[in-house]
Length: 124
Image (tube, rainbow, N blue to C red):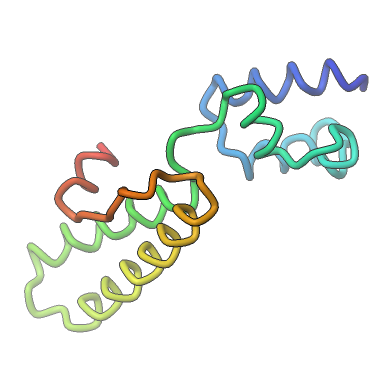
């Protein structure tokens, strides 16, 4: 496939709401493109940043926030579930580490903080 056609395909998938990781898998499995970087010359996230099609929040961070919201809702019902209380701490620790990484790399604004109440609204 020519480079322009691959770029159009990527932008079409982004507009449909397909996450970055899935775009790479789809290109590999359905279109026989083993590496986006070898075709485009840059990584997929840099390409999307140049085309201003990068989502506001990274997919891995959103997935962890969704998980934390689900566990928090479970803990409202099951107050004695000690195991999941500990796991919620682990999930939120991962979220804090990712936020630190993404603020240092410039993907998130420097004043962005994780707040469980606001996170539930962000996910919905």
